[in-house]
Image 1 (cartoon, rainbow, N blue to C red):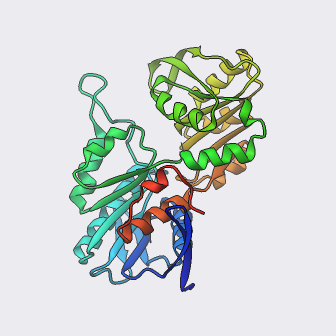
Image 2 (image 1 turned 120 degrees about the vertical axis):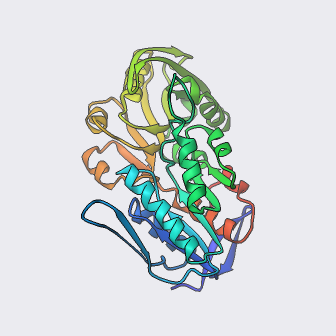
Image 3 (image 1 turned 135 degrees about the vertical axis):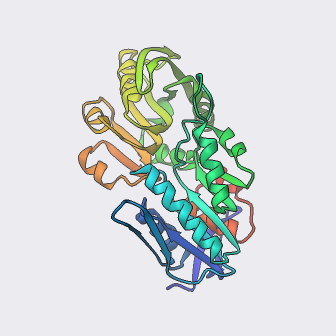
Length: 336
């Protein structure tokens, strides 16, 4: 195991000694991401065993002492979301009962983030319920990425660091799209306007948005393009891609409006239901997502899917949190 690791701090490359009093546990949702975070930090992943009883109940056994330790638990909201959430809650509780000094939940893709408001009568605000459950289980701090709505941070009475994939997205665009100076950043809905304008400003290019009307969840009725994409490279940017109906319809709309090529960049690639077949039949040059959710199998099924590794951002957030440093540098930079 290495004795030191290099990291980015305030723009300068520095070396720090192996961090004492830290434990990083990986849940079963995304073991590869947890391993990458530990490799970046230069530490060994802590031991935990997760198993299920025959009736489906989850059992978590912490395999080493966490007394007085700064504990980080990496668990994303994917696959069987309810099971993954329950496993995270049990792991947090187990660490608190075992006298951990602080427990931080690292949740790259926050579960139930789309249920963040009461948009119709008798609708639940499930994101608030999840926040209460995490706090009640004993979490002292939350690290997440690209929340569906930033105000979810206000559902918590504990610190929440909402990291952004934007710096990694900008880097990918500049390295992989040669004609990026002739592009237009497009939001597939009005809610993502702030996100696309920030990226467009950084690249010094134009932006556009698509207004959509939904008949019901996951079904889009009509789309209207606001902005000009004629003879441009169109880059659709959103926080998540689920069934991919919206972005695939948007791609067709952009090509009809005269776009030369269309790319899609989404932070969380959920890809449920008919998403893979829709992507394979779409006219995208590439659908780019981060690895907040495991994508290995989906990349085999859909060659257009590409991933951007955000483990270095999460690892640096863990390091800075453990050392009591500011994480605001990560809002605009990718660590080296």
